[in-house]
Image 1 (cartoon, helix red, strand yellow):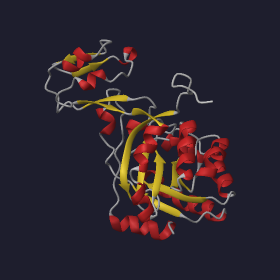
Image 2 (tube, rainbow, N blue to C red; image 1 turned 90 degrees about the vertical axis):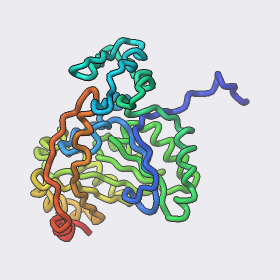
Image 3 (cartoon, rainbow, N blue to C red; image 1 turned 120 degrees about the vertical axis):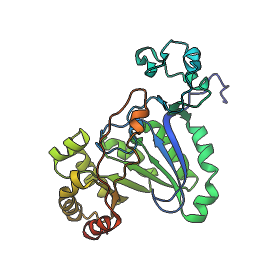
Image 4 (cartoon, helix red, strand yellow; image 1 turned 60 degrees about the horizontal axis):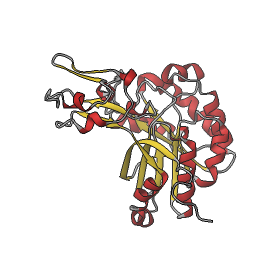
Length: 300
């Protein structure tokens, strides 16, 4: 029996903050990368601090603001106050994340980072790129933030992509229960698995969390025979000393696909634009020769 619209079960929804088309660094071929909001790590070098919170957030570029006060006029909860000295005063406690204030910002100084999307809406966008996936051997990569924190949605979209024969990849820091991996394993062709440090105390200092579960999940996942690529960000003054320990751990457990990622400062300042600012640290970027030296020693 067919159900009418009122009787149909509600769709899975997720909060994402970006859909990046023609990505060539997140798995084989030409890909679409979907970035989810929400993360349970707090890496000191994070490139996407706007992904920390799962909910949509407001960002404000003071340089663009013309001081018209229209954003405050459009806010139904009086959460914004246009101030000639401070630029914009934000009362987070009363904010309902409706986003109306951004629609009233004529100068585009105020923006909303993150939006809700249904599985149908996302599938429609992803399937627009199907010819590129087929031609290049590409597919779709889910990243974040931590995409596995919105597991019901992720599982549904992965399943639907596999039914279409599209290659799938999940970029994860692994800090979730292993049963979550078991749910998406049948629909995931490649795991891009992040490692930050080997020793637990160092990992805590760099990310705010233990890596005991992260390493255990990786070993259990590797025993399934699934395709795993380890990705290690290199911030020389923070984790260079950890690299030989990580390589030994991976090699001893038969995990040989290792990719070192060069740290860059592109994320620095992004957190400052949030009306709930995230203070970030800045570290030294390595030149190409130094990165090549690390890759020759620790990457295959």
